[in-house]
Length: 261
Image (cartoon, rainbow, N blue to C red; front, top):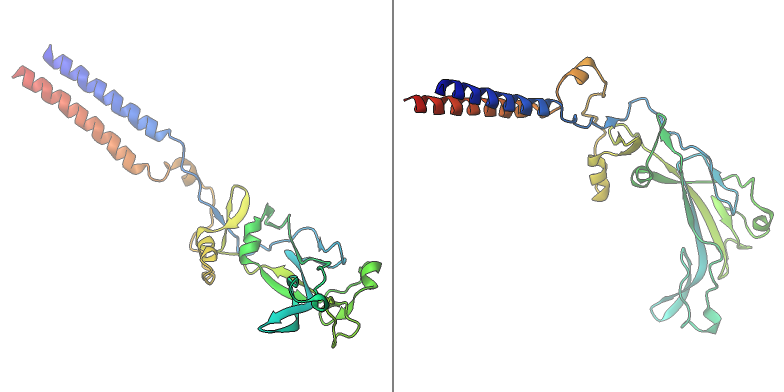
């Protein structure tokens, strides 16, 4: 009779252990790894970016308008005239040395629908990896009111009648466009969007040079092994479950033997 009780206890322990094993086997699979950038993928900036005030446009990933005004600035005990991107406060310079308000601001536009391989590129990628390069627009779409005030000067526009002798309040405006470097090894496809890989994001956050472009991971392809194999990290769980089963059975049999003795 005692042996039957011990046997039933062992069977119960075995059933509990198998239930634990089945629970581990049917647990939610681990998330699939992020997909790296294919070597031959070419990013697209999407819609053309346009400066609405001047009609300047680019087919790159960003457009940057830089405005400078010629104005007074204090230098020690003297006042001098310089080009400055922001208005210099001149309230205490005297009536004859006042800087006028800055009529046009610098402004920046980002590509909102940039894609790579049919998936959107997160704006943080443009901000972290993009390189601003000066370019000279054609000014073919310059509005009439701007054409009456500005004329080509260098790679941009200027309002001075004589660029060699500007007056306080004159403006000069230039533009830059954003170019992307090769992206392979620097991005990952997560949540349907191309985002910075952790390594690249850390380098950008620390203002460190970009890491060498080395894609250490193989391409992610779904195979029969991916479907059949248990989720990563579950092998140890199986051993724990089997260990629990063996320990419970041993305890039950040991108890039965002691009672019989």
